[in-house]
Image (tube, rainbow, N blue to C red; front, side, top):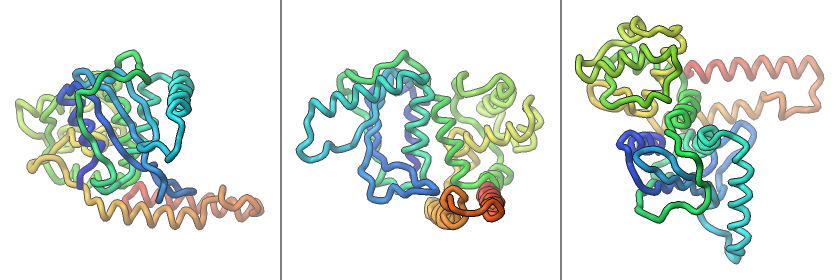
Length: 275
């Protein structure tokens, strides 16, 4: 299965310069579905892998829409987003659009040499943090146990380089151990955890996210994630969540609400375990 998030990660890692156009549909949530929702367009300007501008909008203007009104809407969106740091704003868009398993046809990425964006210019930043945020959402969708199984049964390597902004200070020792695999060969999960200077849960979390991004690879290259199984598991989770989520039953008494809360917590725990 092709993951658009991996495509974007690869473009950034290759220090691409150009305009990236990504068409997607919004992520399905526990309380609403994006099925039939109009496609959205996320348009990023990359210069040697750094984001210089980005804007999100409908992929197609509604029939009969006023172009001037659409421009005004885009300007309002850029102004609204200015309150948040640009990397956090981009992370929110990536989580909404790229953190859900979708078919390759539903997410299209192209590179062009279009003129620079007139809207959405930001102080240049590296999108490593935004990519990790979207990868973390993927980890939840797939299940930690599923990814841990992949990590535990193959030697791991980092063929590329991690940007410094991708790592917290206590993760840098693990990042260095991964970087060393390019020259010294792949290492087992236990060896990498021993080299880490952060708690094992944090080290595992970083490795899961890098696996999802395709940055950490096994002997056969990037790990293949079973798209159909992920979609089916996600669909089953949301169907079950709609039956027990306490927010969907505002008229319940306190005892029933507490029971639903416990059931929802257990459902979420099973999802993290990949069950």
